[in-house]
Image 1 (cartoon, rainbow, N blue to C red):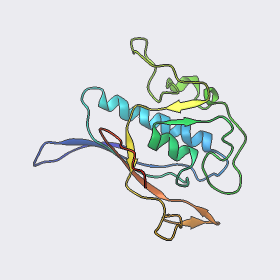
Image 2: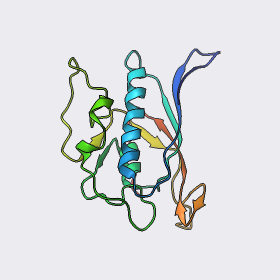
Image 3: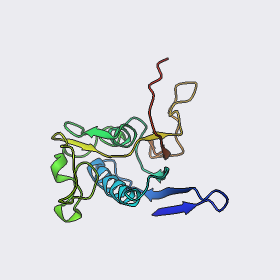
Image 4: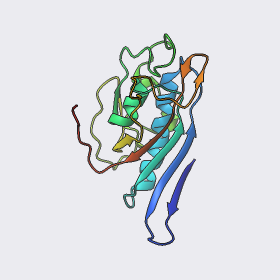
Length: 174
């Protein structure tokens, strides 16, 4: 679900999404493909004017997994990422990045719709990227060093995530 919401008082608009990704530890490639499709649709909504974005989703991934990295860092290297979701002891078989999205989706590994007019930067082999700058509202670990999650199912962490768009990211070292 993608909603474009508008504040009655200020007129400020923003994009809000709510999505449930499948619960399957072995299919991180499908999760990245579905997220790439979601981001392509968000980007399409943003082409006329930039608006803040909030992504509030049940992603069925663990913090700092490859899928998380794809969202938070705008890039994910899929090569040798057998545990792409971060769930469980192992993931599914390796799938090359170029085979994650079907051609009929008309979405590139840059998570944007493919059009002949667009100026696009090449995406390295076995990478997925996206044009949004997103950051998580969570720290992902408690003060005791335990994973910050919303639920566990069969000893697998399944945090719900909230990401929001930012103009610029700053690295903070501690």
